[in-house]
Image (tube, rainbow, N blue to C red):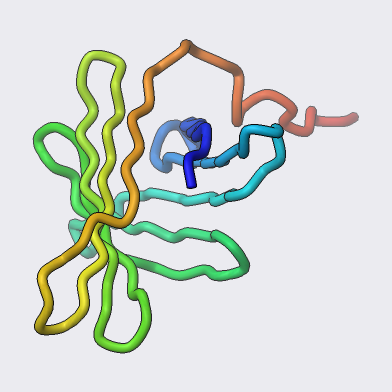
Length: 132
């Protein structure tokens, strides 16, 4: 299935966390996929944390920043994982996911090729203003 994929990325808590919302739209404009993730730095563990919500599931998954992007993986059933590798360069975000089952070669599962279209006020806009 081919979808038009969008990803919104923004910061909270003074930039100490990043939030990501992904949506995949069918040709008729209906949302076929929706996900949300929170990426943060854990000073004690000296590692990134990655918590996602998608399609009725949630979890914490291994996440690693790389020189030109990031990689992460999620369980995909007994003895199986999906590993995602993203590169970000010159306003492009290219991400490929491979499904792997124990003892078998990984197979391509998903590929996204996104281009940056500009700045927005998400997620900071709409914050609750202080009251007297």
